[in-house]
Image 1 (cartoon, rainbow, N blue to C red):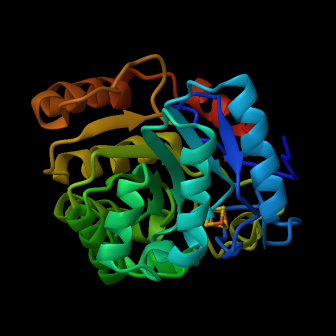
Image 2 (image 1 turned 180 degrees about the vertical axis):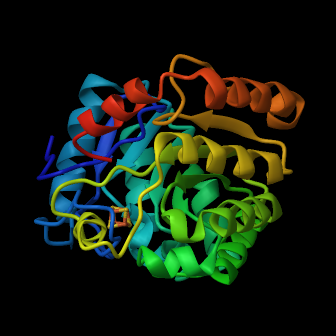
Length: 293
Ligand code: SF4
């Protein structure tokens, strides 16, 4: 298999099989991310993709799911992507469910009809690293799109019948804009009605512009308690039913599961308990021990 440089895979998805079709990230500018800083973006050579699929066809001929890599493989136009999905179906004829994590902007170069056709080729689920639905915050961390783009592109996915995840990044607005980040994100996410909402907490990794800004006093990171309060505000304002996943922030409590609206009251009460009695030092130590997104 041709795995190159850094690759990201969704930890909630099966670890096998994986197929890399791009290298690096087309954006590579989010101010909290160094994951692909030293990786030049390029399409994986077509021969490599075919060789990998031949190999998978031999070792996993009955595979029904596959995860496409790397940062934003769906940046490809329909005309480049559809033949790859056709090739997947040719080498893995039992394929039912193709998944990829990607950027909101990667949907914009495809029409609803093209997305529907990709779905018919097996692309059933994608994950969008949205991070915020608040324009100030999106600009602050340089995500490269705004709330209106999120609504438009998620609307196309819904119309095409492709399920999607949206992620919320706690702490991305710093102390300066925490309340607006939480409330506006919950509003935009609720409007988009994703299948899954995932939440994580900001870590200021060495080498990121946001860490340098924080050291110069231009960005004020949230304390662990403020992270929990922001997460609470986001959850309180989130009104769509979905699978809800959280990590990074809450210690030892399971907030993850389906039927978010049915469990919302319980999730809020666990968070309230955590805000009052949680081991904030331990949470801070876990956050500081993380090495990458
Ligand atoms: S967070 Fe995602 S989109 Fe942003 S630079 Fe990192 S990999 Fe690229």
